[in-house]
Length: 128
Image 1 (cartoon, one colour):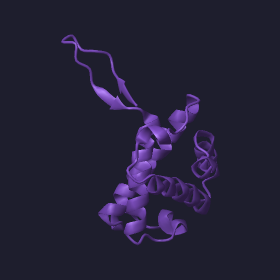
Image 2 (tube, rainbow, N blue to C red):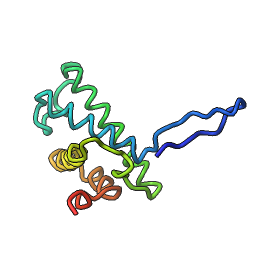
Image 3 (cartoon, rainbow, N blue to C red):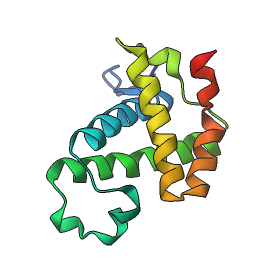
């Protein structure tokens, strides 16, 4: 789903991806990076200086910050993550990313973020 901002004087508009879809792109990349770089256990992330993170881990962390913001934004507006609108080439990877993120939040003890995530998406939808 593409949204358009107000048109310019010349009649053109700037197409943007809806946050309900953008969050999936961020989740997919976060899952790929966080699993491929041999990260420390989630419980140790806060104790490690970010200056010693590999660049890929820093990118995963910035994606996680974006995901947190987008999930909160969707929840505040009563919107849901839109898996069907994403048109993933391999939907299983997308569902795995969603599941991995939920597991990550549980391992990190991020109860508030987990509740917000569950409010905008139910993993049970993946396997029905």
